[in-house]
Image (cartoon, rainbow, N blue to C red; front, side):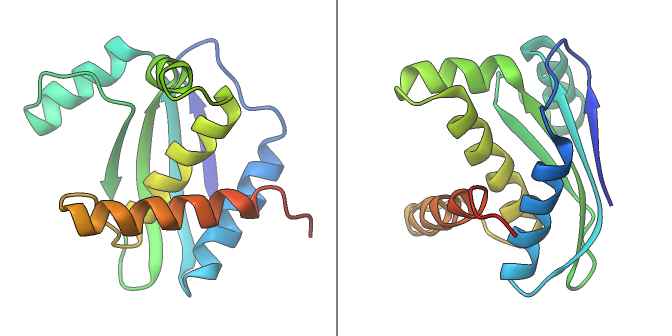
Length: 139
C-alpha cells in the first residue's frame, strides 16, 4: 500500500500513476510492496523532522525512515517540495523530473541502496535514472 500525505498546498496529479510506478520500481529489484507513506511538506516541516529524529540542523530534500523487513519494502519518505523546486532550478531540470528523482531515491534507500561513499553515489544515480524511465512506461 502506498499512501500520500500533504502537509503543504502541493498535491500529486494522478496518484494512481505514481503508485503504479513505485510498485514497478520495487518489483524491478525483486522486492514486494509493504506500506510506504510519502509525506510532502515544506522546508520548515522537514527541518523539524531532521532536528528531532536525526540531530541534523540543515535543510534537505528528503528524509527516509526505513521499516523494510527482508524483501518487503516499507517506510516513511518525507519530501520537501521547497527543496525539490530549488534543486530543479539549480540543476536546470523540470520540477516533475526532480520530483521523480527524489521519490525514486527514497524508494531505493528502502531497498538498501546508499549514497554515503563516492561509489555508492554513482550506483544510486544510475539506479535513479533507470527507475525514472519506468515512470513513462505504460502498462
